[in-house]
Length: 192
Figure 1 (cartoon, rainbow, N blue to C red):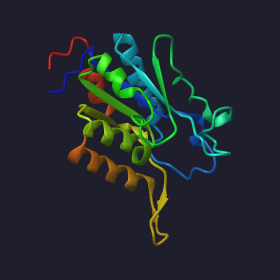
Figure 2 (figure 1 turned 120 degrees about the vertical axis):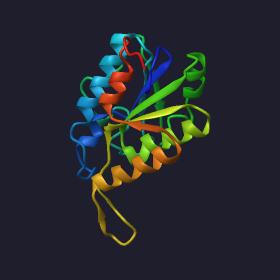
Figure 3 (figure 1 turned 135 degrees about the vertical axis):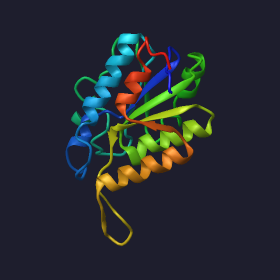
């Protein structure tokens, strides 16, 4: 049974307002924010490390650009005093940042990831973290995907995208669990 501890780092990825409006298409998993907030609350209650990741787009006119309304954190996901913030301009939270160094300084044993979007920045961060030797854990129901079109223009529903990416990540790169299981594993009295 999974047991998490004081050196398990929580990594919320790109919990920003831009994803609620155009140009982003329909998404799946409307409960993702609620689940993410539950994870944050548990880590904060335990006093465990949290490193927030924010996308600071360098693309002109991007809704994720600094100074744009969409750049702001979603309500409740703002870093609190003492919580670290890593800013990135590409998909992986490890590229162009000091995330790896921060994890080493914390002597992290595992990294629990959630955020936006499963198939983009979340997946890229999880894959790269695993390749760098970190024990990556993904909260399956605290992230979501958007509808995508394949190369022929056929719509792939967000839920299908989400399920496929979770399966791929679970096969090779991470332990993939729902929020409830992670909250149980994060209880200080958990005897797993």
